[in-house]
Image (cartoon, rainbow, N blue to C red; front, side):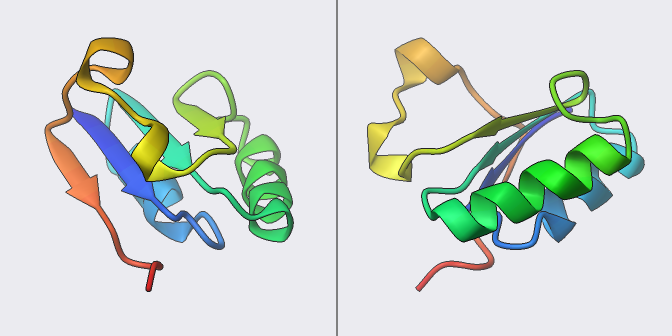
Length: 79
């Protein structure tokens, strides 16, 4: 499965998706503090740029042509 985690915050949802067998997880987080936190979490598990792709951008910047389709989308830590 291919999973998108929008507004990853601490990185928990993306990490869990990867650990539970998602083939690819795209984690997007626009805020610098949260982005750095996610990066640290994913790197510590050896998942950054292998199973989890972390990007620092807003969901409005995503396109189907550039980013492709996803099997599951999580939108948990956004307001």
